[in-house]
Length: 206
Image (cartoon, rainbow, N blue to C red; front, side, top):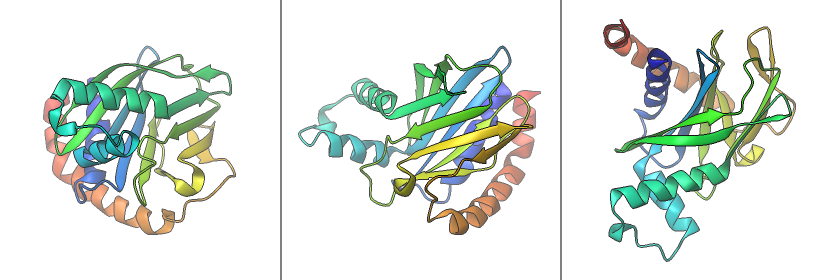
């Protein structure tokens, strides 16, 4: 479990290390032993602040302490994230843990998902008020991790994936405008990041 969470956080960090800006966020849905699932949302701290301000114009962020701020954006994410598996199972987000910083990670436990998937629908509109925002999605099961998928305005920050022979494929729907440009960039940065972090990960998980 610890290794899967660390891998997910390293993945999210690699995507954001080159651009701590509110236009980019990442989300990883991770399965571990015992059919335990986690959802990890990662974005710049500024993105959370702008999103809350856009939704609550009268909000005085500078008067809120860290606990109040975290509670508010956790509730915001729970209201904006929907996960449905096999068309009948609904994921319930619980017990959020926050790593607060310039890059802020929120790690939810997810209850209610089946052990075996046939399809998956994920909506993450938690940053929908931000201009030109897009979210990079990865799903990591016990068998394999998926390719990267893009959630953005053109697909309503939602995607439906079919799962067959340990491979996730996007069902027909609205296509992202950014995919062809973003994927090569993310691949390069992910390769560089994992090359640097490999020894660190091995030392932590062994």
